[in-house]
Picture 1: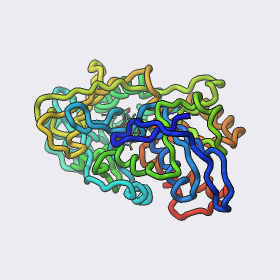
Picture 2: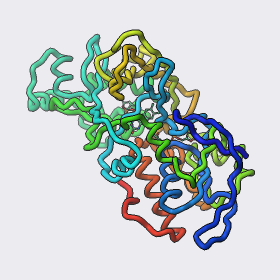
Picture 3: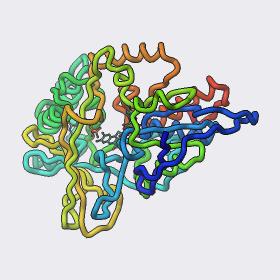
Picture 4: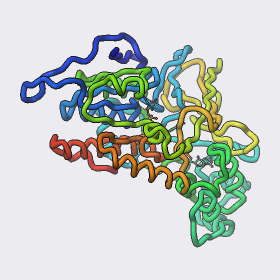
Amino acid sequence: MRIVETTANGSSSSGSSGHTSQPDARGQRRKGFDYLIVGAGFAGSVMAERLASEYGQRVLLIDRRPHIAGNAYDEYNADGILIHRYGPHIFHTNARRVLDYLSRFTAWRPYRHRVLASVDGMLVPVPINLTTLNRLYSLDLSPQEAEAFLAARCEPLADIRTSEDVVVSKIGRELYEKFFRGYTRKQWGMDPSELDRSVTSRVPVRTTADDGYFNDEYQCMPLEGYTRMFQKMLAHPNIKVMLNTDYREVCEEVTYRKLVYTGPIDEYFHHCLGKLPYRSLAFRHETLDQEHFQSLAVVNYPAEKVPFTRITEYKYLTGQQHAKTSITYEYPSDEGDPYYPIPRPANAELFARYEALAEAHPEVMFAGRLGSYRYYNMDQVVAQALSLVGRIAAAEGFGVRAEVAII
Ligand code: FAD
Ligand code: UDP
């Protein structure tokens, strides 16, 4: 077996020997690893860090990709600009505990996310707010008048079930069609009427001039990037990292007591109950020989005829100064890495059947966006990982710490 350490950019480098047994607290030798953790994204890496540094567990963390940090992976491209390989990742949370935990591994750059949408040939702010309405309709409404404007257009519904219901009942059909219908049909490959209400509920509607994309109390970016933060998290002698390594390749060869799996739960069970649907994205990264491309980090393109959903310009997120600028177009797709669990009743039912199967396999613990089949943000994944380690600690008699409660 080759144990691969991570380099400064988070990709794999040197090989070294297999893991040797170490004395435990009673001075006895323990063979192999305590934990095999599959997936070096937020879920796997936070669990590895807690189990190793808080509870002295020996962890083998594997990922089939050539880098740590999962979908949050960032890297300097050929032109020396820090980009996010898997699209824009902005940290936001209301959970002080999650922020405090991650702050052990990074300092932060204050950043408040704002987004524009290209609608009717104009660039207007999203979430829809007072400025959006005034610009779009050439009006000069006050917040009270904007409330009345939306109240006159919304279609109240007794039972709000779908992503169409939730928007139409708040802002009416015209604004729904301009901002949500096309974007959602592209992003998810289905009509908002077929998706759970939770999807479009992520985007608020406001009648004030507040144009922040998120409502969360804490919004910031890791000062030196996500990959650097993960490197610090995983720099513990009890954690070995193996990259370019699929679980199936090593599961028979590695000795471990417990398994944590943060890949797709249906894949772990060989899709025996059928495939859980995921939505993917193709990313087109470009570097332009100009200082800026757009006026802020993200511009959304809701029109269905435009094949991409949004363009991100990273320098606004990272604060990097550079003569050139790097941007990414996102093209939604059914093919490719599983990025988004698709929230709708039929999928929740299938996941519940996999969950029942998982309960019959207490030797493996599922975690993260793919293991839990939930449309989690980064902070929710961190909270879940801390909570799961708390449960492990209690079950194994490691002792429970106050910080592990979930948000
Ligand atoms: P992942 O990051 O997906 O990590 C799972 C890892 O497991 C992967 O690296 C994968 O290679 C590995 N793996 C899977 N199966 C195997 C196997 N069999 N063997 C070995 N390895 C395996 N969240 C925010 O809070 N803010 C944002 O702005 C934001 N923007 C996003 C933008 C995009 C385009 C996407 C797709 C997501 C965004 N998210 C954002 C969500 C965020 O990416 C996730 O919440 C978080 O990264 C999930 O972490 P995870 O560890 O659960 O999963
Ligand atoms: N959405 C939309 N128009 C927008 C922004 C968002 O229709 O301008 C919908 C779309 O369905 C999207 C969902 O709201 O998938 C959640 O948006 P968010 O920005 O949270 O998506 P993510 O960053 O997770 O891709």
